[in-house]
Length: 398
Image (cartoon, rainbow, N blue to C red; front, side, top):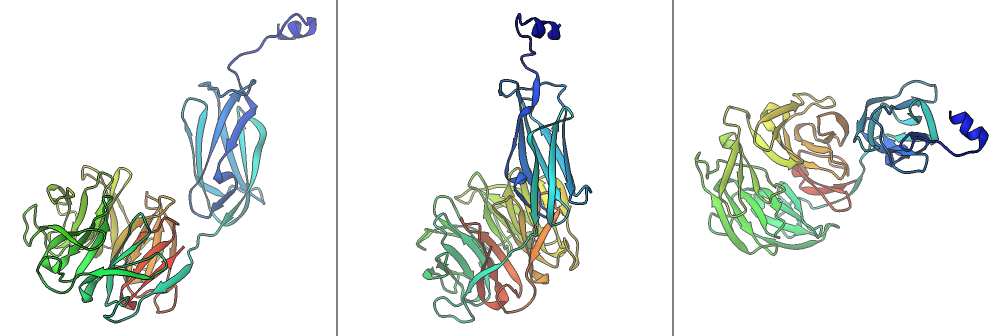
């Protein structure tokens, strides 16, 4: 019937919502470049003959990723159908090098649907370092925790000098507060530190078994905690972080719990009552998960926001994805989990599901080397600030 209508020139017949491969459009960074063993992403929009986004439940989208020898070269290929004509596609190149991504819609290659992509090796590189052993301004005695605020100021808990020092993103000293003691504004081995989005600084005053709160300029605001095993109390706790609701997450190591408090110190909930941890060092919230480094169990444990255990990754060792006394955590701009693998003197990077992405650092005193890295934080530029504790300095990597 279609042939007759066209031949007699008496009209036109078309299926209004039929998907046309030649009109469909693929776009995204994952069609330009990628990093080996790291997820790359792009999208496909299916369109009809008039170039309008359309969807048919019988549409079939396939993606082929091959190297220059014609071999499949990607893992974890996933095509998510939004059922509105938009498909979100992800994959992980196995190795560095050039490869071709070819997209078919209903077994037909679309216009411009074959892309040449180069996968680069994962790497971090040292940028700078500041600090050395000492007690004068800008020097450290085993710095343990780091945090950054919206202005990219870097706050450091200078552990055995019992103070907090604050620097610019270039490492220039700005101000400090605190001294040894147990009075208001004094510290006995400060460790965990975090900036709240209200501008306040929360500091884990570890051997005073309390959290102290300061203004951004270092003026004492308040405190909560106290030594003990009650819900509101702490026992030699370490890492601190802030969740997406502004609550304070405390790794209460001595009580083998993760505790969450309101910004004014009211106890809200705890995780780990069933012996979940041996020595929880730090907990951060990302997306719908709470991610915990269990220092003496040499692994990372992941829970949902209600505290229900989901999965863990890592075990004791020095290989890729293995740990030796992991300490603090952070999430980089790509949504990957970075871990201070302190005993192995390196930083390891993982996808949220625990897949190993890469590593950086070895033991030593040169730039890019560590002696017991304890904590890290991410600047707005994506650069990573690392407390290189036993080298008495802060390093910046990217």
